[in-house]
Image 1 (cartoon, rainbow, N blue to C red):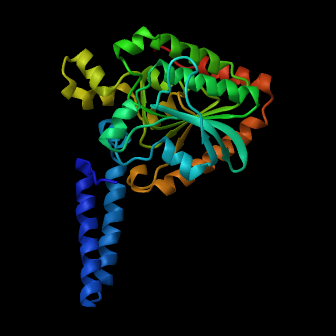
Image 2 (tube, helix red, strand yellow):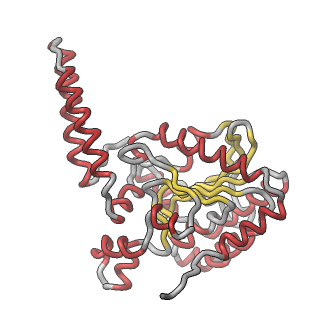
Image 3 (cartoon, rainbow, N blue to C red):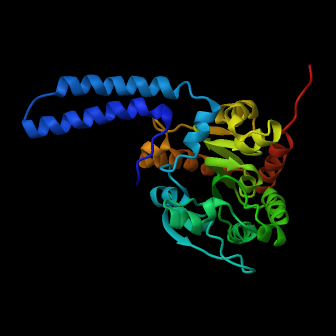
Length: 319
């Protein structure tokens, strides 16, 4: 995986590089630097805690977009077993921006769906940077209906800048495909758990994000438009994206307070991109508890709770 460092991560990287150099020198020269290494490791831990406890909304956006962050197929590989990918919408094409199929979570059969970004240029282009076309949302709906037919719960992993806005996508009914998913997911007769793992961008995210429990990773973002898009509209200047991010309330902490999401899943120190396995293990534990809880709820009550959950969003009082 290529090295990619955000500006505010550089002081941490410098210390980690120094520690690694000391370890290598000590091994080659047979010199004991254990005291100095331990001191530097404590300094790194303190620095990480200090930096990541005071991140701005824009810095959280940068972490959510980090190219080394785990993507849907990484989580599927690390959390689930017996994954069988299913392809195509049975109408137009197989959209590789959304992956999905059958899998098991701690022995429980389920249908899993997720936006998939690419690691290198070739894969990014093949997966359209996780910006799905209508056929991606129709594939997702086909798999969710399959889950409903066989009584299997649904897990969705959300990480997209937004739905693809190209002419072809509009011609094939992008808005209709997303709207249909919102309607069908609201009444899907199986438990649905949504995990926003990176970017939750606009309708592109919401097209697979209607669920009984909506989780959000600690440094993920969820918004009606990207900060750059908002800045372009309000100030005619995408460079004002940091100001837009601060004003939009896109962080997990703000959205939890507004009841847009249900639970924040903590990330490893420094973000999920620094430890895929730890992040997947943490998320898996939260998912197991969420599905165990939802499977005990009678179906009629589950659907009513889901309906009321989304009806309550956006309610406010003027002082």
